[in-house]
Image 1: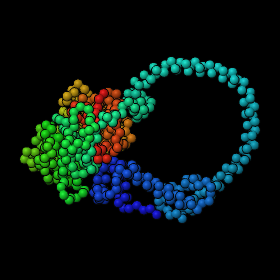
Image 2: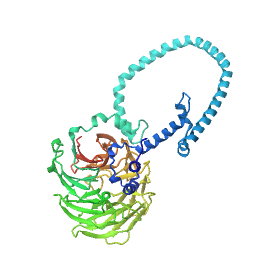
Image 3: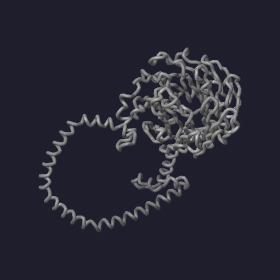
Image 4: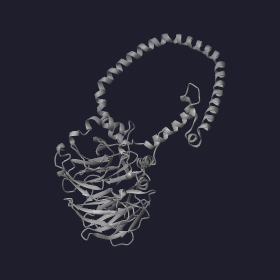
Length: 561
């Protein structure tokens, strides 16, 4: 008989936690269960494997309990058992239950059969009466049928004459449906049927960058040039030189176009090798990376290690440069955030205000910032102060992501409690509470529009991406939902606005990247790869989109409208 090993079961549980959105539970379980050392190829394990495995086990128990029954109608036996019965009782008890329940069912059928015989004669009389009435009505029906046929022909001709006009009207109505203004088909139907063929990005406009030997968790374009950084579970970051203009397939694996930044040399703990986060400074001259080993590193564009910053006692989950470029901010599983002095190459101040892992950090200006945690709290801190200058409490579960708007006046947050909230430094309570998502919200992004941006005349918008497979766009001024973008078949891990604020890219474990028009609320381009997508990002010109995949690759998409 086939059996399952403890390693295989652990991997199924690990994947179940990941797919269900329990990111941090999966992280802890993965560490304790030694998932990183597992020889199992995750690409061969289909989504929902654990649930499928349990369901098939229950089916096996049902079959085993029914094998001794001689009834020809075997499929019917499966309705006699409930999942709780299968879990709590052995096979002999299950067989007794099936026998008893079938006996009761047969007894009920016998009673019903007696009642049916009593009513047979009455039904015969009613049928004869009904047949006579039908004969009387046939002549009338023939006359009516001739009239109806003439009317049908006339309507069909009219429909054919106006069919083209109806198609044009339907296209205009699609945007209103997405916006929830009118009833009709779901937005997913609109996006995947009316535009799927023309909007698929051709393979000639895609460059696949290979070289990583584990899933690629993060990617970021340099703000000033054509360099792309990627971070992976293989303990490396890579800096790719991407040629301007259209993608060139011959540069796919050119070793001259990539620098490999080795984070760990020699033998080490397999659990601590992942490069989890990375960020470029404002000038695009230095790249900072954060790793599961608790260290932050600073690299030059030539791939040289400039600094190693060590003080955290746990994995680094988030890392950001300030705008001036003299400080780096890191958030760690050790429940703290640290500000690092880049020039001095040492820590300047450690902030220990959270009671759980610090999940995200974001600068408000060059000297103050916000932190979020699994403890549900958000703290606003300032260099030199030993206490938070503001604390926001209101989420009911861990706060996954925080982002200041372009002016630094509003802070957006999202949580496993399925809400996104908007906070102001002028008050303690949130000013908006967005509750339209039905599952955990993984990340949020502000549009590069409105005051303080290069697009000051456009409305400021917030995007939220959720495990409910939707992206939602919010009017922050009015506190209302603008669009619910329904096109993914799985949770959405990443969203990114184009530099001009007209488009939004989204990536999902369903292996697809969708590019949405914010004017219409529709998919205008889409691409399907060979692995789940962890992050998407635009280059500064807005003509290329990078995406990092679970199948160890990075893809570059040419974007033209």
